[in-house]
Length: 117
Length: 171
Image (cartoon, rainbow over all chains, first blue to last red; front, side, top):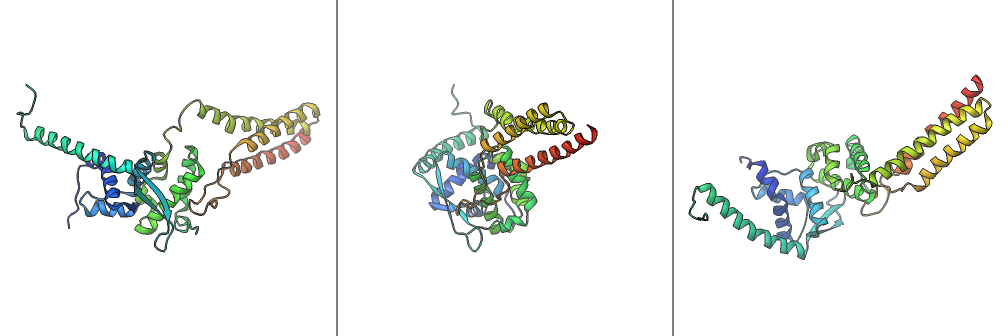
């Protein structure tokens, strides 16, 4: 299968909210699983060095929480869980993103009918 | 369970990461978490730390606390952890040279002040070892600020002994 590549500035700008949405969908998950989900969903390959600092920031903002558990025959695994604030942020971002995507699509289509007179 | 075995195969990368996290004032407990994140990821994916996380120094920069460059705290740290013990070691070395060459009073005063500054630094510096986030065990017992200062103080003491005998030869 051909590898999907989106413009890096698009994936950079949306990775944080997308990772949060995956955590929200799974409830509790871990870094490698999030990377697998991103790739399987067509977002593209993301490196661990990009994801883990984002998870740390989401945790610092109170949108996710974390705990250490047992890995599968290896070192410990850090699990991350969505918080109530994280769920609220996903809902808020989804609405805002729809508005933004519609706006961008309109501009890119060349349709000027919605512009203020 | 304490491992660090996976990263032991990449000790150069791991040590560079720890060093640069230390330089960025990341606390030892936090460094332990970052190390185990890397180790866990590397164990699951089969990637090397370099492949998954890139250059250790750059990765440390992305994980540093955003306030680590704040002044004046940074300036106070430099004075307390670098300038004072540096002055202490210098005074100890010069004092030993003078003691060896028979200048007892000035040599003793310089030596005592030098030792006092080194002891003050050792006593006030936080030990803050890198700890395993699950077991709480120190991962790298000697790679702490105190361990580093003990190592450096050893150099100053050896320099003082050498200087004392040089002073005797020349005095």
